[in-house]
Length: 418
Image (cartoon, rainbow, N blue to C red; front, side, top):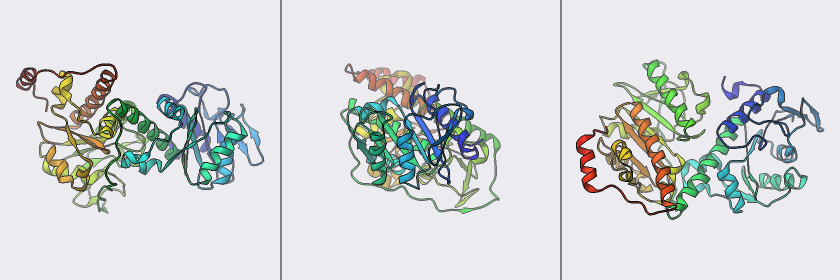
C-alpha cells in the first residue's frame, strides 16, 4: 500500500523504516510523528530499535499529554507537540540524523535551498537555530519559534534538522531533499565551492487535457517503475525528484512528480501525447524531455534527475571529464556542461545531446541522460553519479589525470557506447 493509504500509526512506522533503510538515521537516533485533526500525536518510541519498528510500537499522545502504547514516546516529544500546537498546517514532522545534515548543523549554518530550483521548491527557505539539550523543553521552544516564523526546514546546531509538512509523504520528501542538498554542497566544496545561479528560472509548464483514450503498454510501465525504484535505492533520485521517460511511436510514458518511488506502481505511470495525458499530473521536466525527444530521434528514453555527486559538479559550475575513467567514458563519452541559462531555451539542451554526447549536466539544475532504451538511460545516469563520486574522492587528496588522446581514440574505435 502507498504511504498515504495507511493509518497514522502505520505511516509513522513505515516512514521510520524508510528513513533508516536510506541511511538517514541510526538504530537509536531520530524521531518521526504525525498529528491527526483532533490533536492526537503518533510518535516513534524512545530507545527502541528504529530499524525494526512496527505500528504497535508507536506511542500515542492525546491532548493533555495522556500517553498510550507499549513504550514511552520519543524524548523529543516536546518540540513535536509545540510545533503542532503552534502551526496548524503542520501535520507531520521528521527529525533524523543524516551524516551530511548533521555535518552541516555542526558548522552552525543553514544550507541555502536557492542553489537549485528543485531544492527550493521542496524545502522552501531554510533556517538555523541555536543549540539546546536534546529532549529539553528549551529545545522545543527554540524549534517552535522558527516554525512560528514560517520556516518548515530548521537546522539545529550540533544536532541535525527538523522538517514539518502537511503529511508524512511531503515531510519525507523534504528531509531526503535536504540530505541531497547538503551532500551536493560538500561535494561542490571539493571542486572549488558551490555557486548560486545567476537568476531564478522557472521550468516551462506543459499544458494538457486529461483523456482516457491514450494507448497503454504495461511492459513499459513496469520497466519505468523498476528503474525508478532502483534509482531511488541507489541515491540517483530522491523522494521528490527524478523522472524517467520512455517513448513509443505514439506516446510518452513517465513517472510524475509527487509519487514517492517507494510507492510507485504501474498505474501511476502517466501517458502523454499531443497535449493529452492519461491523468492529471505535475512534472517539472516534461517540457524539457519532450524537446529532447523531438531533437534526438535515436533516443527512446530520457532520465532527468539530481543525484548528489553529479550536482556537486552542477553547483560548482565545473565540467565532469569522463575520460578520467575509461569504463565511464565508454558509456558517457564527453559529458556536456551547460550553463543554467539554457533553462530559458530547452532547444539548446536538446541540441547539446546526441548519440555521441548522450549526457549533460546543467549548472544549478540537473543531469540528463538519453539512451536507445530505458536500460541505457538508467545505466548512464548511474555510471555518471558513481564516477562523479570517484572523481571527487580522488580530487580531495590528489591531482587527477585523464587518459591520453591516443587512448581515447582507441576506445572510440573499439566501443560503441550508444
